[in-house]
Image 1: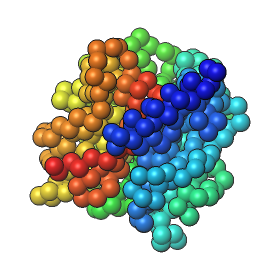
Image 2: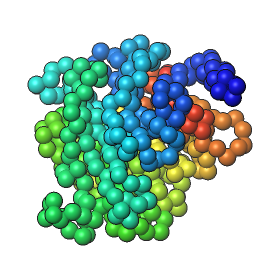
Image 3: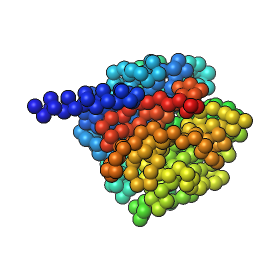
Image 4: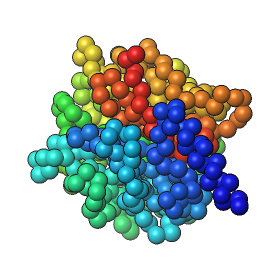
Length: 388
């Protein structure tokens, strides 16, 4: 009887979401997973959308039996095909999907999708104590995400775990422990000196756990040869910088936008690179981009007067994961002229109503947003006309 009641409630909720132009993509409790979290989305040259997330088998916890799952839409997000599991690490954790399509490899003229992800053999708290290891992998697809290659482990190129027996060049000072990609999509440079470079924003903890998560710092890794070799960027010199996403600016520049895990300032950390993400010329808090210690997504959606037009989406609140808001900048993040409310709880309850998100460009005036909603009950998709 209880199961029937829950099914009826779920159907009512789904109908409500559809009426609001919020398309349920991953619904917790469906398709063999108790919970779905950590959305990421990309579009292909043919217009298909690929939505990834973590399928958490037994519950909503960050560690446990977690798969990376995918759904494909061939009609701009109105409908989605059946769920497929792309990564299954048996009973362990596979997560932080960071997809990107390589459009510059002459060997794959239709494009090759890269899916970067992490695996872990213990919880984040234990890995910070060096009781476990987080690894970095990727898979590729050359048929639009229908089939995938075997996984390739790139941990020793992108991570600095204290394992001198594997890599004598690493020292105790490079004792990276916890490690995570993004969350959200990775990016590829489309123009300039670094055209073709794939950059994956990431973060790590270094050394023993510190107060206010000061052992955390953001960084990135990149490839200039279509995944044959990888290089690690400089570390952001702001203790507590954490989950990050990057996007392309003009004149070979890159912007990385990071979560402040210290929570002393409830705003996003912005870092600018002038050499394609290898080093960082400056990092600062953008106090316009308020944040409750959560994930945020950033995307380049066009150009105006030679400058990148940026879209940024997060829970624009300093207390709760709520008030999902889309912001638009016409001057590469110096100012955010347009603020578009996306979704809000509508009450004063302290709950995670809108949390992690990712964005994809649908057309010159439309952005698709894939985001967690209603205390992680579902990951939904909506399309916004940002020029209205």
